[in-house]
Every structure is written in C-alpha cells, then in structure tokens.
Image (tube, rainbow, N blue to C red; front, side):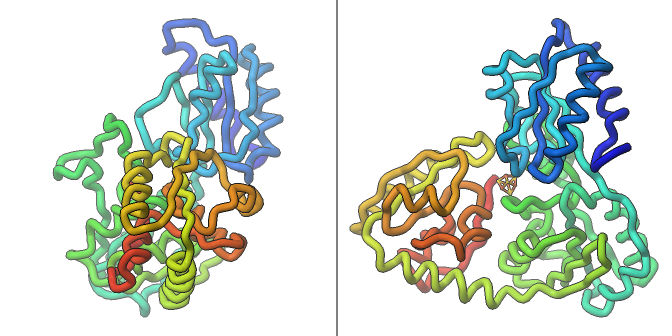
Length: 344
Ligand code: SF4
C-alpha cells in the first residue's frame, strides 16, 4: 500500500461493484479530498490498467460527502463514481457510488491516561470518520478505569436502527460527528457528564461544548495530545463579528449549490426576515467560497447557509462580517442564546 489508501482493496471493490451493475462500465470518476489528490494519479493508472476502464479524476476541491460528484460524473459520461475519504451523508445519488473511507486504527492505550483525570463518570464518546475504529478500544479502556462509556447509535431517531435509506441521513456510524452535525453528542446530553472526542482539530469538540455546556476532552490519537475545550475565546470572537454585521445595511445570503449543503428554504427565510427587519438582502448561490471571491460580490456583510465551517474557519480572512445561519437570531436580538450552526 502506497499513500493513504489501499489500491488493491479499492480495485477489488470496484471489480465487485462492476460485476453487480447491470450495464457495462466504460468510465469511472474518482473523487477525494485535496490531501490525497497527489496519490490519485497512480490509482487512476492502476484502475485503468487492471480493470480496463477509463478513469477521470474530479480535481476540484472536495471537503466532504456533501459535495458528491455524481452530477459531474454524469456530465463526464461516467458509469461509476469512486468517492474516497468520507462516509456517505446521503443515500441519494444519480449514479452508483463506491465509498472508500480512510480509517486510522493505531492507538497507544497510554494516551488515555492523560484524558482520564479530565473526564467525569458518564462519558459520551464521539469521533470523526477517520478514527471510528479506535472508539471500541477507547470505550474498553474507560470501562476498565471504572467509568461508563456512552455511544449514540440511534441514527434513525426511533430507537431501532440506522436509517441509511433516508434521503439525507448525514450520520452513518454510531458516535460519528461531522463539522455540520454533532447529533451523536447532543443526543446523549441528558445521560453524560462529559465527552471524549477522539480526533484532530478543534471545530467538532467546540460545537459539542457550545451545544451542551458540558466539559469536552479532546484526545488526538496521532500524537496523544489531550486538551479540554475552552469555548470562551470563540464566543467572544463570534459576538464581535455579529456586532459588526448588525451595523451593516446590505446583506448577501449565501446558498450552497452542493447538494449536501443546500439550504434554499433556510436562505429564503433569512432573506425575508432580514428584509422585514429593514435590511437589504439578496440570495447568492455559490459552490465554493473564498475571501477574494466574497469581496467581488460587494455586499456589506454575508449570512452563510453553506457548511458552518465556511463562516467560522475563514472568519479572520474575510474583510467584511460573515455569520452563520444560526447566528441570525443574535443579529436580530443580541440577547438570544448562541446556537452552533448545524445541518440536518
Ligand atoms: S457540510 Fe461541511 S462539515 Fe458537513 S460534510 Fe460538508 S464539508 Fe463536512
């Protein structure tokens, strides 16, 4: 195996899928996040040589399965899409898709020693797709230490099972969180006294801390680094952006063209609400957004109904205020509670 994925496994899976499909497969499109793009050329060559089909790599940025390249694949006359790096967030697709998740399963049990003193007795476990294989191990370690580990698995919401046939189920595995959906944590809020987030980055655990008011301990399985989320600096920063936005007159309301980020009804509601409050507001449909592109639109401020990370991660790079859909409540009434934006 070279690079972050296993070519042999992928080729096996593609062959199996091609055998199952009723019609011939002449062309396959391949899609993955920027971090793996440089390995996709070799994979494309391998697939072409070993399966005898043409391959086209979708080389535009892809940040999640919210940006599934099924429609682009059809435009390219492809019969099958290989999507690498993410779990599905929807069962909807215009052509067959093979999802190849990237999982990391190594875990040094001594890493848990740093987290234990920061955790309570009833612990909710959450993780991102890459590290979900570590979750059972972490749960055993917590149980061995006399704690109770909780894992939310009621994705269907009815106490029965995962509903992967739902048009937009978004969460695919027990305990899985996305930057746009932390239901696996919030659904446990009445049962737990703290959370353990196994993963990298601060965005997901920050959302959990803000949405539950419970301590969130982060454990990076790559480095063993342990931390406790402090949401205060984030909140201060967001209130400053919202306060600047409230002084603006002309708003662009951003609507996502990516299927898994499209909140057209929400954007219409926000546009009407802003107008009713005396602001000028126009809806702007976009696929991707960058600070220079935003400048070109020329509005005083923006409401983003795209991925929640768009407004927050690049917040310091925008020259004008950009707030999330959920922050509009605070724009209208600064006394409203802070709500972390999520997609459902
Ligand atoms: S909307 Fe954002 S957080 Fe959600 S899957 Fe897409 S890129 Fe990830």
